[in-house]
Image 1 (cartoon, rainbow, N blue to C red):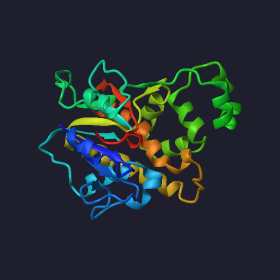
Image 2: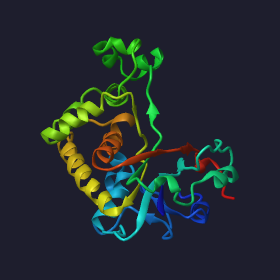
Image 3: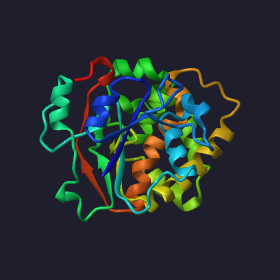
Image 4: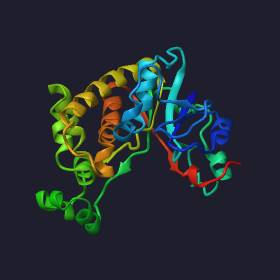
Length: 267
């Protein structure tokens, strides 16, 4: 199993490496040459502010860095890690070291792709609705009492315009399937996944980047001036990724944990 750990900070290289994670530095930070990066011969490294970790995914794809003979390739970040089942939330790097997933579980044997346990959206707090997108609340006041769909959640945090326009850039069949998926009340978040077959990852990259670049062309004259809009292509991919893998492969959900390693010193 090969897990790339994507970071925007040049910290904790030794910790990642000692846990069989491959440290990846993105976002223009001052990483030394031990770190893998997103600026290969063909790259979109300069677009990191809008694409987030997908600048590294593009680098893997276009520079043919994926080993097609290798089983189980995946991704985590400096703040979100795959862990063993029934693990307690880590409070220190030592705790994290103890709970990190370091080998392929037997439960994965019959599956193609591992996705993070779903984020259940439920009802949103009233103040969060007012703070993030008052227009969305006026458009759909039922959000005050009803559960939030994936589509509602995206529009609330990233604006009402982007998702609908992005969907229109997909082919007709995918549009219909994606629209149905977006009416669910949970999704597998954070662009985390582990895939058994790297050829499947390459197919995903071809589809998702084909779509994201169409979106980039569509939105090129818009002002992306807030966090929820600056990284719009990363956020679109975050909703598209679990949809795509569920449609094209057999998936299993797996636990992950939040732990910000940038706020901790290496062991």
